[in-house]
Amino acid sequence: MDLLAFEKSLIALFVAVTAAIVVSKLRGKRLRLPPGPIPVPVFGNWLQVGDDLNHRNLSALARRYGDALLLRMGQRNLVVVSSPSLAREVLHTQGVEFGSRTRNVVFDIFTGKGQDMVFTVYGEHWRKMRRIMTVPFFTNKVVQQYRAGWEDEAGRVVDDVRADVRAGTEGVVLRRRLQLMMYNNMYRIMFDRRFESEEDPLFLRLKELNWERSRLAQSFDYNYGDFIPILRPFLRGYLKICKEVKERRLQLFKDYFLEERKKLSSTKATDNSKLKCAIDHILDAQKKGEINEDNVLYIVENINVAAIETTLWSIEWGVAELVNHPEIQQKLRQEIDDVLGPGVQVTEPDTHRLPYLQAVIKETLRLRMAIPLLVPHMNLNEAKLGGYDIPAESKILVNAWWLANNPSSWKNPEEFRPERFLEEEAKVEANGNDFRYLPFGVGRRSCPGIILALPILGITIGRLVQNFELLPPPGHKKIDTSEKGGQFSLHILKHSTIVAKPRA
Image (cartoon, rainbow, N blue to C red; front, side, top):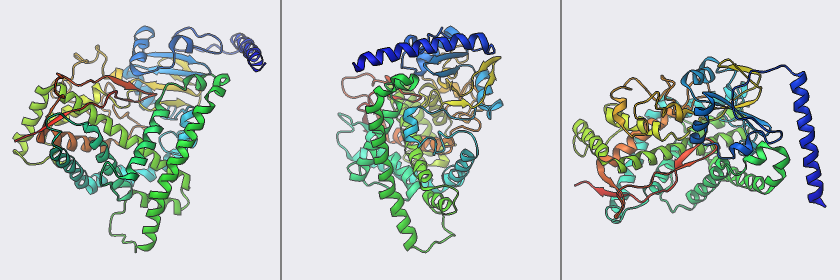
């Protein structure tokens, strides 16, 4: 009986929506919409396109329909931007009009409906959160304060891998140790804390919850219920799990980090002449009434995902490409030896004197962009883009991966060739000075974490290459670099075993 009632409701809704579309066509103003597949009532293009809206599939659609294309995914309008000129419009020229964020049903849960900085709409709350986060996280002063810590963490990775007899023969999953390093890099900044080992119980809990959050949020499995409200009841179990993970994570942040920092601050006399860790600045803002406790927790949530995971993915991609391109790895090693001298360990200031290292990092971010679709944008009001009308509250995806891998704009883009950034693309930087190359976005909603990510990438990759010969495991010529795409993320599918043979 319940099934029969559901079928009748579905039919009734289908008729109603069809009628509404017909009426709107007759009465409403005609919009010049971007081209795209012809939608069907209720489902839009979902039945044609499916759930997997990854960067490669969207690139294929762009080649068919054009640099601005419209997908109607159930009740949501999704506009895909695939040219540098249109990217400039969205991110720079009309940065205010397209400066908001769209959230789906899962990101609504994990961000408290936009109480964070990354996913809040463009406006006063975003400006306030950006200002509060900039001083303790995203300035050159922060880099100089913490670079010695990043160098120390990279040195500990080298020491641990060198001490593991398996590493130089059968190989190890290097990512596991690099993950601990990245947590320590960011938790030193946030809480003036670090985890001693991969077996630290608190680190294991934190890592597990963050992994579960990313898996749930980046999955395409829930798209059908987000696109089509009548199917949302089928997501109840999924959304319940999301809420449970969210509550457990925020409670962990609060109990083991925020409350402990508050206790420490209350028992120690504040010395204003000393630089405080990031959370002290954030808690000061809370005390002043600028933000509330939920905002504080969501700032911690943003850093756990946006800073730790994305940088780790990029390090892992960079190492994988160097393993699979030994001639590039050797060229980089030779540069480090020639510039610094054999055995002199790479430091943050050194990275600026190593142009080939910088080129390797740029090429990794081009070919294996961690956020290939950037974080989605949204226009709160009806807007114009490339001569087309963009309906209000459309989800705007800038396919930054395609901009950096379009054969009409780049020479042999499928090749991992760092030399391009020393030759024909020598003037291109990761900061968005060229709209063909936007690994961190550009404009008002660009990723401020670029100021941390680039030096950490340089220190880590530099230290690994100068201390080890990085090889595939015995019996393999290369390691698997198959991709795993998400809602807007890209990481390596398989965390491969890598042989790290210590240099003599």
